[in-house]
Length: 307
Ligand code: SF4
Image 1 (cartoon, helix red, strand yellow):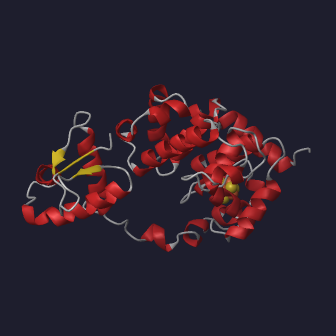
Image 2 (image 1 turned 45 degrees about the horizontal axis):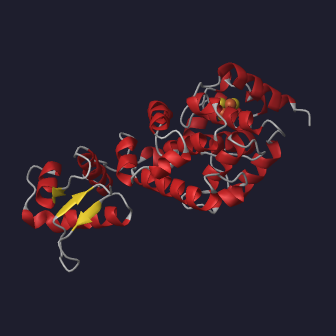
Image 3 (image 1 turned 30 degrees about the horizontal axis):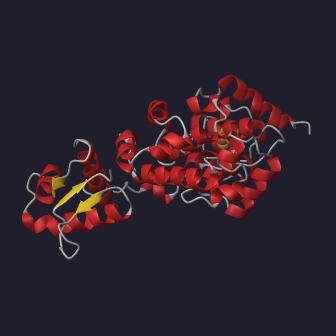
């Protein structure tokens, strides 16, 4: 199918200005899966060096499956959202045990694997296996919304329909990456650079931004509200706990009081239930292992990584 002038312009722009990212030079489904999991909640600049380091340590799905959860959690540092490391490891074990280490090509089959959602399934199917599928991340969502609907936020059904309609056959990987790069560099959330945009002539939102009204029209509540404080939140302490356990020698544990004092200088015995609640949750998620002398014991004596 021949390209429309609009598609040609965007793909030509991408050829020239694309971001050079290490996961774009491979078709290895495992490497692409690793990059997509890392990118879920972390910025590209932070992911790139860790991606290379992680693949050097665990070059294949089999190598990752052979590792202990503790090794994977240690290797994940400093990306944060450590649950991703545990889930990726479990997924590797599942694929090795049940699928001879081969990731399926079909996005529906990919989604049957625990830990793979619709976005990751589409990304692996498209970038590794060349399937013609839209891959809609936050940037793509905003770009398609502005281009074809005149606003950044569009109903999911309409967005999916638009994404499928404009997808060029046999060029979906470059196309999806072009939309991602446009969103990351020019069509940014607060101040799009429409005069530099290769598709401004086709864009429904461009006239608004070029007249200087777009920023007001598109400044929804979440941009105005102050972000929730991170320090002091459960997420903050969950990350600090795993960070502290990563500093221990393999197999070592720490007692709860010492751990609490490593987190908070004024931590006292009466704060143990608060710490215990965080640890129980982390243990359920597979991020830590609790040590009790007997199952009937209330508070655990010590905690370590799941070796
Ligand atoms: S013209 Fe402006 S709003 Fe439209 S896609 Fe380009 S950068 Fe985004």
